Image: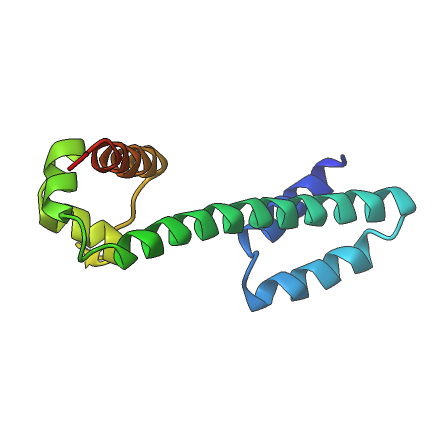
Length: 133
């Protein structure tokens, strides 16, 4: 890839999701008109869109987990999950579950925390399922 084109594509990537993206892409396509350059631009933009698709799938998965948890909130103790599986407070757990803003930053479960949360729910389910009265 030509050095100049590569630099311009990196700038384009930084503007993804903004109105400036379309404008920069149009200018880029107007300046780089060879078939090779057009193919490189197309491939780069498609790669960016593929990455967005993967990120959206992860967000959907996280939202599904959080919605499922909110749906059972009356049945299980968030305090128990927070303290037993995360060694954190109920407030910490609730902040992440609800996406609260703390110190100017939205709190969310990271990937490791989501794995721990999934494990906790499966563990609780096994414990409840093994009860016999």
